[in-house]
Structure formats: C-alpha cells, structure tokens
Length: 485
Image (cartoon, rainbow, N blue to C red; front, top):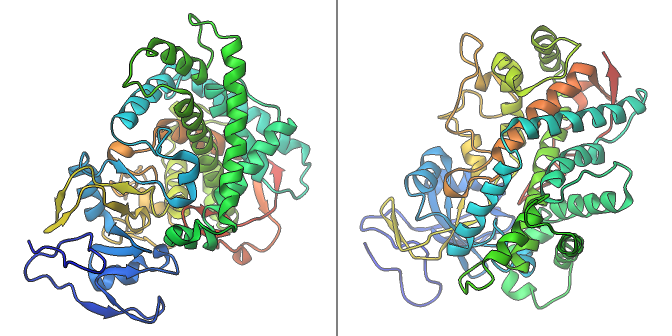
C-alpha cells in the first residue's frame, strides 16, 4: 500500500498500487477541480452520495473543512464495515453541532470503555423495566388509549398530529427513565417536547450542516448553530432537576426508574477510579434515551400518516387485515404481528421510505484498519450512509417510492431483508430497537382499528418532501382529520 502524500491535507485513505484515484471535476459542488481523496463538500454530502458513488465507487473520502471523512455506500460496503469488521468500526465521532453539549459523554456519543460500561448498563436496565416484555407492551397499549381519546376530541376537525404523537411516544420512554408519564396538557412537558422537536429539526438545517462542515472556523463566531446547544442545555437542566428529586427520595432497594438505577450504580462504584457512573454521564445518557426514544418513533408515525393518506389503497388494505385478525372489540397486542404480514410490511416500508437518520450517526475506526485495499488510520471519522442501504437496488425490488411489496413474498408473507437497517447495525445498533418496533406496530394498529386518516387535499397533491434533509429526515408539516370507523 502506498503512503498518503506528505504536505497539504493528509488523505484518510492510503491508496493501493494501481488505484483508480484521480483528480476530477465535480460540478454542482464547488466548481473547482478536487482530488478523489479529499472532496470539499457543500451542499451537504447527503445530497450527492449517488453521484459520488457512481464516479468513485462505494468507498471514498471527503473533507468537511480540514476533517477527512470516509464514506461507505450501499449494502455490501456498510455490512462489511459494521457487521464483518464490527469491532474496528465501533468507534464514535460527535458532529460539531452536538460536541459542545456531549463532549464524548452519554451512551450514544461515548467511546471505548466509557461506551462499553454505559451500553451494558443501559441495556440491562431497559430490559429490567420491560423492553421487549409484556409489561412494556401493556404500557404502550395504555398510552395508545390516551391517544385515541385525544383523537376522539378532535371530532373530525383538522389538526396537526406533531405534539400528540410526540406526547404518546415520549410517555413510553418517560415511564422508563423518569418513572411516570405526563399529561398531554402538562406545560413543562409540552415545552420540553417543543424544544426536542425544534432541536431535531435545527440539527438538519442547511446552516447546521454548513457549521458541521466548517466548525473549525465558525465556532469562533455567533450564529444559528448555538440554538441547538441552548435547546439541549435546557433539556439537560430539566433532567438535572429530576436527578436531584430522585436523590432526595431514593430507596436503594426499590429503584423506580433508570435514574434511580444509575444513582445506585454511582454509589456502588464511588471508590472505583475507572468508573464511568457519574453525574455527567447520568444526565447525558438520560438525554440520549429521552431524545432518541421520542423523536425517532414519533417522526416515523408522522411520515406513516402522510403516506397512508397519499396511498388510500394501502390504508384500506391495512384496515381490512386489522378487522380480519383483531376485529373491533379488543385491543391489539404484539402477538397479532405474526398474523398480520401486510400491516407489518407497510410499517417496514414506512421506516425504509422515511429514512430517518440517512447519514447514520458518525462512526470512527478504533484502530488502523485495512478495508477493501485501503488503510484507514485509527480515529478516522466514518459515515456508513444508511440511506444508500435502504435504497440499494440490489436488495430492494423497488428502492424508490413507497412500495410495501418490498417486504412481501409471492405468497403475501413478510419477507425479511438484511438491508433493512433503519436502526443501523453492528455494535452501535440502536439500544431501543425492540421498544421502537413494538411501539410502531401497536400505535399504528390501535389508531387504524378505530379511525380512518383523511387528508385535507386530494391524495395525489400530498407533498412528501421533508422539511429538512440532513442529519435527520424531518417530515413535512401537515394537518389531517381522523374519522371514526
């Protein structure tokens, strides 16, 4: 393997002999000649991965300012990294927009031993509090009934579903991390959800992506990039108050929630100098769980509502299967899923189409790693682009558009697909995957059992274009009516 050239910017990839790497002009980016290794990127990388992949293959390097980033496109390259070389690609990089808040703390953005301790502990606590079990299923079923009551109160009038869906989804994770649900009219809860919704959108704006690209320069200047930090800081302070309240009433023999369990573990390890159980990791891991456990599922539900209104024939088939398998007289349960392949396929396709975290959360290699003839130096930032896996034409019969048939075989049974990776894959796969899958099935079936989703415009005029398309895919704003069935 040939060493990277010395001087100028050091390439993240060392070229093998006979490599096809060369200088190319990329019109529509900067209008300049740019090296195959080290493409300056703006507009954001996400908008042009297919163009770059067509010219440079599934593995290439870009530069965000002076930061070299290795990009992986398509199912095969992403699988090879996250599954086959899981340990090597299990590192983490925090994008600059979030760095000021997290500073490598909290389970999502932690590295090394800190990450291992926090992930092992968090998974254990989530399972103890019912993730994947009957107890959390009953909690979701109960929350779905509160949501139905709110829908009933609309009396068929148009409304925006954003905060009702955020409330119901957030209350599930709140029951785990805070030990209680919130009323949908609780002002502090609504303010918290608004901050969360706004910060999720703000992270995906063009400005935030521009800042993430040129943070080394822009961090010295005021600007919209500070909004995300301010909103996340307000949420962290809310959590800090809950931690203080839990400390005052803590019974080590009867933990009520995730915070209690973390506090008990902090006390157990107070004399261990290598322990990662401290106040900062408690607050920021709780923020990770609260944020991820709310925005991901609620945004998927919102996109699902929009898709079911645009394709009423899909909604009608879901109604038919719900009526046949569950009927109108009992609450849906998770066992129904195995008997409802069409509903399950639609939910899979909603997740694939909505492509919620298209760039993935940035990874890093934990050691010097050979990958497809390249040597990637330890610590190099890596983006395994989930959007290129979810739209991989070699794995999906109809990768573009909305087609539930992507997940159905010729006999109408659910068809599993290794390229279905909305929760990522490998060692950094989403902690709450089992919880999210349960929530999506129970919320969709409970709502559609009772209501028909009615658009305010002709279905063909429904625009699916996201509000923002960057770190996250933010569903467009819309109103709808819910009509009792």
